[in-house]
Image (cartoon, rainbow, N blue to C red):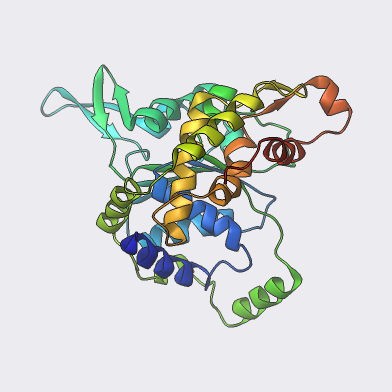
Length: 315
């Protein structure tokens, strides 16, 4: 049994639910990425607490937190850092950028040009940054959570497929239910949101999260589930409504996310339900519809649901 995982994420869930109301599935998916060591693309309309969610998570884990407010005039050096000449020593020294942190919030990532977006590529894949021919390692816990707004397209730069594929999950954050919104209003009236992220005390540590990741390696996966997952990935590439299916990296992330979900639920083995639970956030940003399917009104969510129904679930 993954006892440490269960204990740590119970603490985190209870604490974060006091601040973020009515987004239980979003929170669980964010926990899955944190446990599996993946990056997250968080998409939602303005005012749905995307930034607050990430800042709250960083505060509760008690880890280093960096934030980049991405704009059209930003340069790669604004993220990575650059070499600065010291007049006293007559040498160059590295001035590290905000990317050198454990949890990085890249706010409104689609508002900065591709040249600056690409500054994150090496860091996301290899957990390192190369500047002036020198490679600097990033913290072991390094995780990027990038946000974007799905309804504003003027002055934005859609992420290329190569970068989208580096995000383990694309999490959609929607409006809360009526009851949840009432609770939010009461929380606001009670002053709960006043500098809330600064007032939160950590309920987990960096070392505990890293130990939880080690526990994840002990989660068992039956051969039938390897076959099931492989068939799902392969079939996604043969769907007539898609011009691009799941990549090999998608399959690896899908397995890691399913194992993380099983661990959070307190099991030391993966079930088909774990694979199904993470299917939408793993695939929704990787699959590309054909022009004909778009004209017919087909959605990616529908295709993923159909994909899961077309592959027999192992017994």
